[in-house]
Image 1 (cartoon, one colour):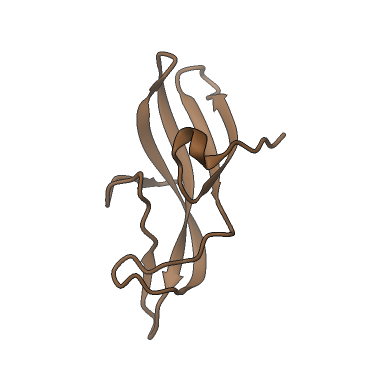
Image 2: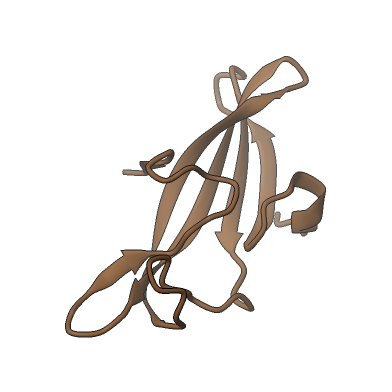
Amino acid sequence: MTINISQHILGLKGQRVNEIKLDDGGVKIVIHCSRDARRRAIDPATGQKGSINQHVRRQVNDIPLFGYPCVVEIELAQVYINKGERRIEGCDFVDKGGSSPLC
């Protein structure tokens, strides 16, 4: 089941919250998001619009919720610039290098 929660409630600009749940072990809260398709793909280095090469999923540790550690799974666009150059779009609520890839 999918739910739609506004990005403004959790401050996840550019993401759509699809699901919030306790993980299987009941140890942490996991917030599953997907990239908001209405958002343009922007090269973080130049600020220019680019096309989306592919989407990548990342996992970000957030502050605890209700006494449980919290992990936010986000989806970011890999932006194709030119001449085979690709960069991951910037994300306001994640420090550069502050996320880990999902396997």
